[in-house]
Length: 369
Ligand SMILES: [Zn+2]
Image (cartoon, rainbow, N blue to C red; front, top):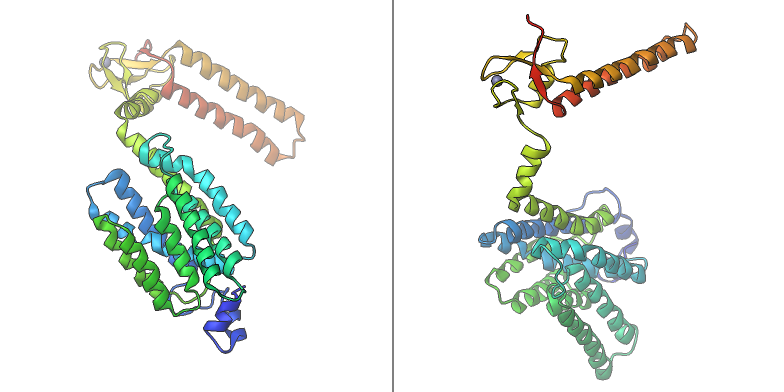
């Protein structure tokens, strides 16, 4: 699983090193999964900040950690994946899936000018594939290096034109982590993160410098996969943030949800005030009961004719079912009688209660105590 380049760079006893990479064995430092987790938390803080607390610059500052760490994970993913084509396809697929949640979360509608980071990383993988096709396993020459750089620059230009998140320096950062793969970890980290930080002009950009901290603890282990979880987290968290934002910023929707769809109070037929909650209304009982007093005027109220009809039908149906089950089954089969007899009876009471909670009007009780 772990690739040849670990063999070359990190140990003179490759076999022993390699067998430890997957499992649950503990190793000092942070593995790939833990790096992704740190980046995901940073990204979540950043996005919560952008959407709900735009004035809180510390959230953006912490959020800048995410990009260089994810870029590092992408370059490691590219190095170790079984199939680079499938890796590219996965990123491309999630770029498509994530675009609508990305637009909705940040603009509230469809925005064709800016695209999500999955697209940036998919383009970065294309850049690495082109670079490898030109440079890898060949005799190095100025011409090859220039052609390779031109190919990467071409992909960077595409990213700028398409409006992919972090544009050219998102791709550049992945590329730097990749071409320094045989160097010491601190060199990779300083070069990659340094590039990210220098290319940004916003004042929160210095936050990306702190991306160096988790990266310097990387132990070159993959960790527990959780691959699909991280892919799904990106569109998933954007969608959840969008929905939350919609709920919080649409007072009308809030009113409909709480007070109209689930009416909190029912009107007393005597004083005309909204004095009964759904549960209180249901507890008033039907027309044959003496009802409950209105908290405002004290007149006893019961559920009206509609409730009487519905409850009668429900209970009659349950009763019929009990009789049918009683005669249709062998007398000894108590389990079945209990199941098919008691369940409809309970269902009839629950449905009747729910009906009284939400549907039908109250009337004044005829029966006195
Ligand atoms: Zn009343």
